[in-house]
Image 1 (cartoon, rainbow, N blue to C red):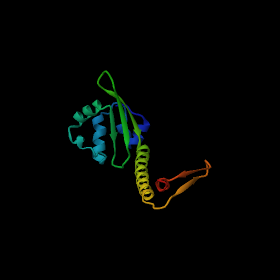
Image 2: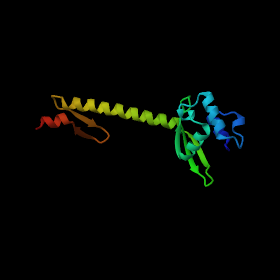
Image 3: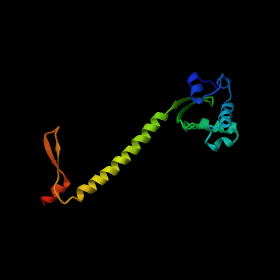
Image 4: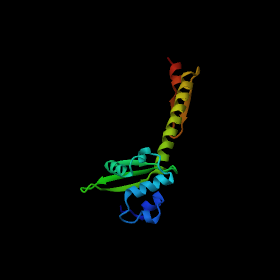
Length: 144
């Protein structure tokens, strides 16, 4: 295996595990020994597992520290692959926050809609930037 300095930093690997020619099975064993493996597939024979991951072109990996790493593999004609590893932790946090905020907004809209539909009096709101008035549903109902 051949890797660069960023790969070593991303996976917090010692120098002896990033020298050219290091078998993937040694690195996987290091992850397992360190407790970084949440995926129980490593309980299989490590050589068999390294063969299996070579067939997966895209993989998400989560070390024990909670970071999220996306791995893209491009197969080579000799059976090996070239992989890029990207720390997507911040991207995933942003996506999660966006999902949570969308759910909060939807809940607020449901409550607002219920309030408007249950008003007995008319209501209007001013749109100063457009210098116009926009009648609310309750007001429209009162003109029926």
